[in-house]
Length: 210
Image 1 (cartoon, rainbow, N blue to C red):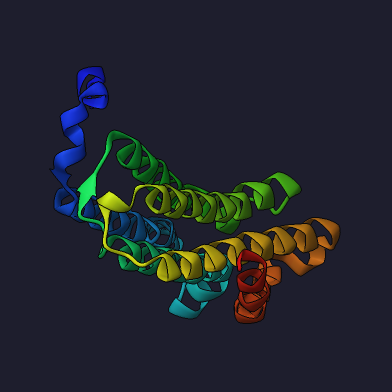
Image 2: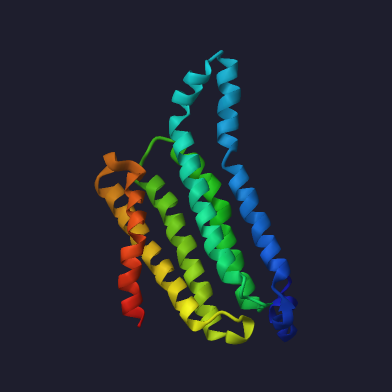
């Protein structure tokens, strides 16, 4: 996007449909890229005449990382999709916020490959779970921006507030998962199971927002 477009007041009137289609395409590509390390593992196993069971055992950590990241990206996409159903017009600011959100999604295949192929270390957990925090944080920023610009959408304030409570809950729980992983390395990424507490934490956040 050129600087002239960014400063152009007429940019406010652009339809959001192209942006929605672009986001869907980026998310689909990111989810597809998650499978590449596993494909490389198949080639390596074939070269060593491994059996299917040996491949499964050898790739168990990568398989785990693939499933977790696939589900998380799908979850983030559903949250973003539900929000943007109500968005009708784009501003330069909203477009750049959305690009920032897509950046965190595109980065996910990289950190997923790290968790499956590189020995576990604190920085790895910071990069992986930190990316999840960033994705949730940018989505929260998106909702705040829309709340301040009601002319861009037809979402109710109640819906935006409910979405904010989900975003805040996820940020808090991802932070807890990161702390658990750093304090007790043996736990690994099992700390992400705290995400099952999203409902109770969201209830607390809703009371605070009210």
